[in-house]
Every structure is written in C-alpha cells, then in structure tokens.
Image 1 (cartoon, helix red, strand yellow):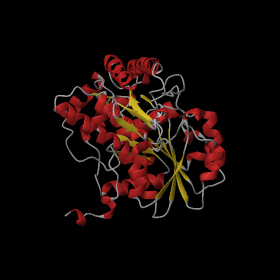
Image 2 (cartoon, helix red, strand yellow; image 1 turned 90 degrees about the vertical axis):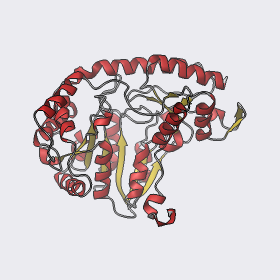
Image 3 (tube, rainbow, N blue to C red; image 1 turned 180 degrees about the vertical axis):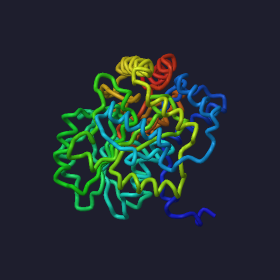
Length: 395
C-alpha cells in the first residue's frame, strides 16, 4: 500500500537527528551501552518555579480549549519579553503561540511560500528547514560555509544567492548545529544587501538566544529596515529545559501573524493550556534565573573542546552559543577504520555508533557534508567517556 501514499510524504526525508536518537534507543534496549550526543535536548529538569506554575494552573482548572493564537496574558508576557531581551516592540496582535518553535516555523513558511519560490538557507542549517520548505513545494538554495569562516555567510555570498524567485531567507543565531553567533555588525552588513530586495522576508530563529557565551544574541528585526520584513521565532524548549512542553511563538507583521493564526486554526488549534500558563511564569522571570544552566553548558563546551582537540584530524571552531560542537572530519575521508571505509560524514557517524557506541549526527543532515554534530547537553562524565571512546576508535 506504500504506492497509495502522497508524493508529499514519500519525498519527505526523515529527521536525521530523530532517526539517530531512535537508533541509539534501539541499541540501548538491546543492552548496549550507548552514549547519545545526538539530541539537542537539555538534560536539566524544568525549574521548580515553572513546574509550580503548571500545578497551580491545573488546580485553577485550566482545562478548556485555548485561543488559537494563545492566551492574551501569555502574548502580553511575550511582548514584554521581546522588548526586554531583544529591543523589539510587538503588540499582542503580532504574536502567535504555537505547539513548539517548529510549528511556528512551519506556519510561517506555509503562509508565505508558493510552489517555485526560493528560500535561502545558510548552511549549516537546522535539519527541518529544508524539509519544511519542500513541504511548501518551494525550493531551498544553500549557501555553503566552512569552519574557517566560523560557519557564517558573507554579504557577497548572500547577494550572489538572490534571484527573482527568492522569497525568504532563514537565519538561525545562535546556530544549530555549529554554535556560531552572528554579531550586530555582521547582521547589519547582511541587512544592507536585503534592503535592496524589499520583497524578501527574513525568518529569524532565535530559540537558543539565552544559551550564549560572551556573544549576546542580536535580533535582526531590531534593524529598522528589517522589522516589517522579519518573523522572529522563539520558544521555551532550550533555555528553560522545557522541550516536552511544546511552546513556541512568533513576533511578526500583523498580517503574517493573522495568516499564521488562520493556518494553525485548521491544523492544531491552540497550544496546551497548562503549558501556556507555565510559560507566562517562565518568560516573566529574569534570564538570570536560568544562568546556572548556561554556566554549566559553557563548562561542558570547554571540556568537550579540550578533549576533542587531542584527537588528530578533527578541525574545531569555538562555538559561542547553543550546546553543540560541529567538527570538520573530512581528514578521515578515504580512510579505512576498524574495517569500515569512511567516504563521507554519514559513514563516520555510523562508525562512531557501531565501534565507539557513541551517537552523533551526520553533517549531511545540516547541509554541511564535511562535519558531524556532537551535543554537549549531557553530563560531564558522559562527555569524558564519549570522547575517550571516540579517541580509541580513531587512534
């Protein structure tokens, strides 16, 4: 019956991060000691003050359908958060709450893209961007980067990628998978290019904004010429260790926000009522309340970089945000290790899973075929053991 499925689903790729996580779980269930560095999920518990807000919401009998675009009180809290953290002034009518930032991205793409439109994706990019664009029957155009450029595009590269069919550009800073962070100066230089093309819209995915180490997040929408053309995406999954709560949101021009509400109303309707009430409490708290997690991530980053630097053949940059390291492993291409031929990053990632019992994600999934992604959202002991196993396989 496979032939009865739509072309839409048959041509849609599996999420490589979720596929690797599933493979790791399968091996664990077989009794194999797998250390997973594949998923982008904090290993902290949700802070107590947020959990208490959720319990209170249950006791206060929040159990009914929610407004499609989110509770008014939550959108007010998001509006204040945008002003406090991003110097952005969004009214509550410009804000839509969704079931995770992924749905926020999908809503935005679906209401703006038509078949044949082009979307520029600076690579590396988050795995679902290309799939979402494909679902919209649009085309994605990759701009490749390298570790030497800190995985960031230049204005010249952006200009060269623009065609009459370009409708959107997706930015993700701090970046998943590279951990790179665009500075205000870099974004302003890119904005200068985009100012020449007023019909191109910008999706700015800032889900990792609070997880940064010395390079604060800068929102491209805070550039005056970009504000009315930018959809700012955020959520509470990463910074607040609330991945399973599934709350994301956008700030956007009102006509786009209304379109996203219309789209969402026919697909999922409003986001979970308890999660929304807890999110109000999370966003009203100062970012200092979660600094302990950021400090620990920074310690883990430094530990992983120190250990990986001792392995010959890995080229590594210094990630300034998120919780990933994205080494270039092309040194190993063409070699045979433990009886396995390494022709690409996928081969290398499988080698580490099968021979080191360490789960990573191939860079092919992110548009960067010379790299692999390692998440340090794991304990320091797990990081030490994982890198030890990797070193034993490669040396």
